[in-house]
Length: 195
Image (cartoon, rainbow, N blue to C red; front, side, top):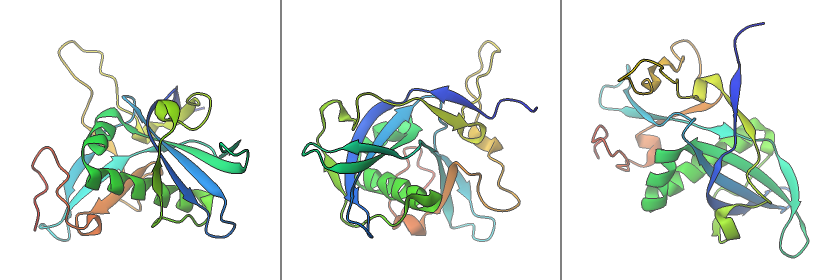
């Protein structure tokens, strides 16, 4: 066989959101988690439009789990893992937090999670900032991983190897244009500026 397809990680809790399925009105909890093993975001200029800056934010989605809410009612739980620095920025900036939640909801729906109410989600105040006993181990796909560099003096490599030149973005990375992000200025590097 080929090389490793991913690495197993135990994510750290960040915050929890609660929403509902559109079809059955079932409660859904999404644990927004973090790990240093997941790549951070990367800014790219659109080849078609030099004024448009795209932000790529890799994420890892764990499997759907069934659980019970505090009233003993059935609910569904997902773990979505972002880079630690990305999550820290989301905890400090409400607009960026909303943006990440939108990415997580969209990714869950795209991966077969059905229709979720993306408009009426709320932050859930759960002990430990996690729905469930403790964070569940998951496999982060190679495209979303930070590459460890053994040579002295080098740091983790730039996530420039996300292969997307031909076709759609890799399965665990999302491309979002600045316009799709409502022209919000999320970047700490100053690469994205408001129009």
